[in-house]
Image (cartoon, rainbow, N blue to C red; front, side):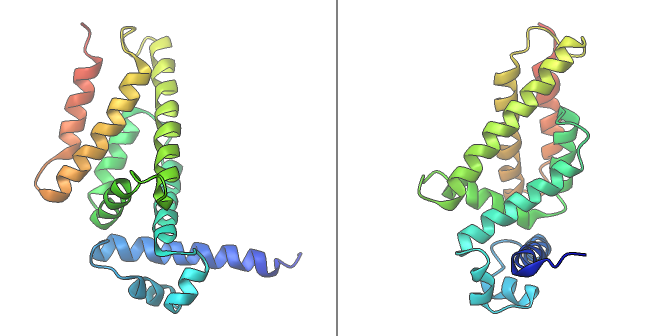
Length: 189
């Protein structure tokens, strides 16, 4: 077996840090978790933690990327039912929804590290979702009148908005509203 060297060890350590950060933020909440606590959870000092990411904002963007990677790995395809299932699972990790919502707002500034992450997330996510919708239209599973690109953009925006609303009122059933909106979108006209 070949030696992995310092680069391989750095990648492995970075993955361990991200796993610890995901668990800590999901359990405690984004707003209630400090960088010092994330460093402690990973068995590092704050400066040691930031060595792997550069800044706390870069760390938080890496946490979101890791969360997306995990979510995508659980999907069969990027279908409406899959996306609704991801939203349903998100109720179990409110701290990660807090993190996403804060980073989404910060991403409005093109200089913020989350800007490019969010831009690409929406661009790639809506393109993949629109492609799935077009395939479903071609198979006769969705109405031909549906504008796949517009529907994908609206669905993603609605999902994110409903999650933000849920952070304010945990009794709000975001998945039921998202499902209702989906059925309204695909209803024959």
